[in-house]
Amino acid sequence: MRSDADEGKDYNVDSLIWLWDVTTQADKKIIVNNSKGVHSKYYSPGPFSGMERAERVYVEWILQELQRPDSKAKPGPRA
Image (cartoon, rainbow, N blue to C red):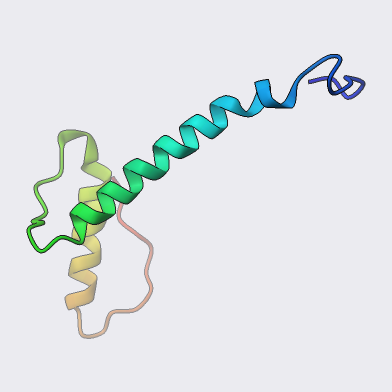
């Protein structure tokens, strides 16, 4: 949007923010439902997908570091 644009003449705020509102509400619903599932007594984590290689490497590194008696802050793993 140009700095010399006039609200009501050159643009309508409601028209600009409607998608943001819609996606925010949808995101909130997804996040709340995911949280309910993860915090359920029935939840059991599954394997990482093939697209989550970096996440798997990081989690494995964290778990190894937590088991070390002399664990100190060190650089993370390379994916």
